[in-house]
Length: 484
Image (tube, rainbow, N blue to C red; front, side, top):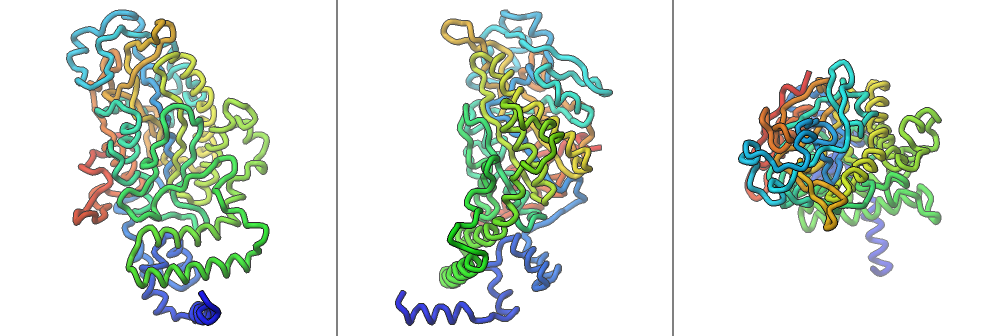
């Protein structure tokens, strides 16, 4: 660009647009929900006008305002955590009884021809509800009267990647929006200065994270999750040394002006609109994000509660504490992915290590939210992509015993957000292979999560390839007994 072009561009950039002109170009640069909120706050857009900009909204009374999904990647064994099976101890080393084997779906890796393996962990009853929980999870078990345990989850995908996509998007091939994307698409965010959907990863061992799990799919790109580092916070939000606030403002305003001019020529472009929104949000995060992720200001009591000074619990404990802080700041959806639960060998040492890292932080999160009056409006969900077989999968020497993948029957739980705690929904057979009471699919769980946030799965739609798509793909059944 030569000097004359620079002068003309600056003149055009400095032109003061009218409110009518600004709103007329709203589908270009002002598409983000976060910016819509800013316009309302600044008196430039009325609440009525803003309602037409938001794509959806609550369809029914919401029990929860926010959601935290504690995703245990690699798959915890249900018979070793939340679904006690004393018959496994009795039949240790024996084949699966024909009466049960005949009902096991013909899917790969079912282990139905292998010998049964007793859980190395003990179960006992907790709380007034008397729900049995493994001694792997003594801290979370203290909160069992606030937890609704669903023991009859099931699907048919026995592979980690596709299974994780099923758990987080509803589709095994990962071509659909994540649940977090749907939720922020439907409800926006209460946070002006932070992303509406935040994702944090911990323990990178085990199956690789599946990006569709926080991706936008066919939704506009601005609804994808923002992947952040729990130790340093949102990347690239620190002001460069050579910039001050005024310089940064002018730079970003000029970039936005150029992007808007480009959009005016090419028409709507989801990725470019998302980039414009990300610049705007990034600027606001430079002042708010560092504070949200700075845990040094927390009291000794809070650090102890979450296990921040214990090497085993520090990483996930820090993320759980950040999740609570983000909820307080209005972030709509938070996904904490803890990897490494894939126990094909050495199940005992594997699950001991993973529960050691997560049990105390999860209990602290529930307790902290409850004490602050936030659990009532925050839905907390725990679970993996599937469960593990009741049979043994040993290494070549037959010493390090583990379990294979078992999507046909596994456990998840919910707490807060209007959930009726201290109850168990559904059950599996005596070995934990398949549901025998109240089967629940991932789509059912997704429909239930959306329902808690006031979203009707059939009214939350987005036109894609000339079809009105819904979050649950083919629909799911809301688990109504979950709620009080």
